[in-house]
Amino acid sequence: MTNRGKLLIVDDEKVALRNLEHVMKKDGYDVVATQSGANALAYLEKRSFDVVLTDLRMEKVDGMQILRKCREFHPDTEVILITGFATLESAVTAMKDGAFYYIAKPFRLEEVRKVVTEAMEKIRLRRENQTLREQIESFQGKVKIITLDPEMQRLMEVARQIAPTDCSVLISGESGTGKELFARYLHYHSARAAGPFLAINCGAFNEELLGNELFGHTKGAFTGAAVDKKGLLEAATGGTLFLDEITEMPPAMQVKLLRAIQEKEVLPLGGTAPIKVDIRVMAATNRNIQEAVKSGGFRQDLYFRLNVVALHVPPLANRREDIPMLSFYFLAKYAALMKKAVAEISPEAMELLKTYDYPGNVRELENIIERGVAITTGKAIETAHLPDDLRNLTIHTFRKKDGRISSLDEQERDYIQWVLREAKGNQTMAAQILGIDRVSLWRKLKRYQINAS
Image (tube, rainbow, N blue to C red; front, side, top):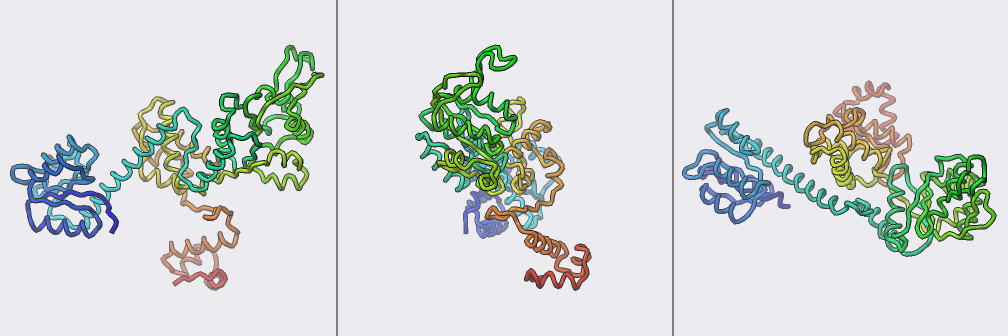
């Protein structure tokens, strides 16, 4: 059986000790058992344990002495006290001194197993959080993509391989997945890292303003043009220009951009002599750019020029293992910005965060954590600090594990199965909940091959 953690059991009653030792070993714990409090202290001086389960009343060395020794040598070890002489005063003292739990004799083995499991889970979460914080600290001041997802790690490997080249890169993905972060990652791993990285959202300007931002103008080119203005294409010389939401660029501007990329020169508005530029162009879109090409909304020649290397960033719902690490990254970021001592996310809150579908992707997760840090008055984000629609949500994702969106039939089948589970298999009750008669439910069960037994 897999080792579930290191456990020290201390009890001067031989029968009780052997029973606990037998049960805990059977549950998969690495157990050390002793009848002597003095022996327990000797063990604690030589090695660490995840959890100590100790009797309170023992001769020479009692449970409180063991608790205090743990706090001195192993502050992360959780101590559970067991006693047949339970009083309110002794319980309060034990909890003040840092005991995880206080169990009164006679106890049920199931109760002890449950408390030990909870203590081990607390240890696991604490270590996981510490690992995440250490990893996050190593990211500070760097363009680092925080991920444990195999597909994201594969994309990063591709990015590192193409970073030293000057080839154009087209990055696709849903809004909020981190397309600009990938572009910055490529830039800072390239030979252009010392040069500028300039970004513009092509959907944020009309054609005239976008042209002015990209190509600039000369003094007197239009009313109010009192001085020359460099466009981003010129200002990014020696570095990288990132064109976000490239499919929103007006057709006429697409022609000018294509020429600028091909000829490596720009002509500012009102200018008469082209200006040479040395830039690497990266672009991003949250739309299907191939469909835009087919419909005529995006030039095919510009698409081929930009799409030398294509990277697709998957949605956050497809890489849920990244949610805890990203959550703690944003927690550290906003706790520092707001100067608040918030360092934890409760297990219940994290469970909600891990199961939510994130239509807004990483950007939405960041907003949720920022809100949690802002409104908490303690040291942890709890479920009460999460948005109401997330807390009150019975999680149901419309995205399948392979990333595709479920069909209407798949949604109906999944919903019927869920209602049947809630109704404990009672088909009459399920039909009433679904708002259909018993015969209609039978037909749907047959159609979707649902086993309702």
